[in-house]
Length: 80
Image 1: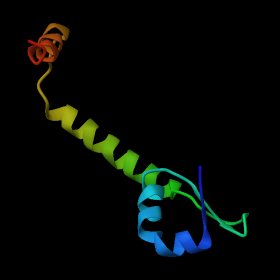
Image 2: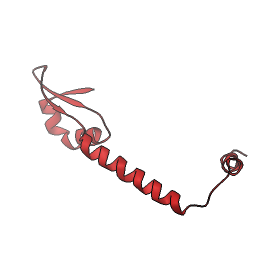
Image 3: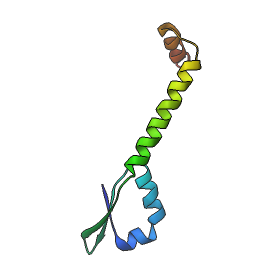
Image 4: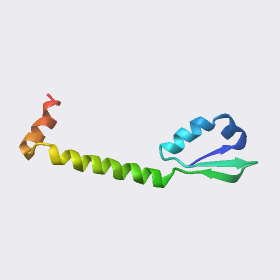
């Protein structure tokens, strides 16, 4: 958890919001005392994860079946 003063938060708000969007919590302080907290929007993150999972499941329906040997060969192909 990152802590910043009000003056720093005011000057760097866009950067702090980027940090929050990546999952970090930011505490804003005044004279060293916490007065506010910027936290990620959990509902939005959950919605995005559910949407991504639904897209993966839909893609799996149309993807050809691969054997374990094929998957291992694909993995190892890039290691040579």
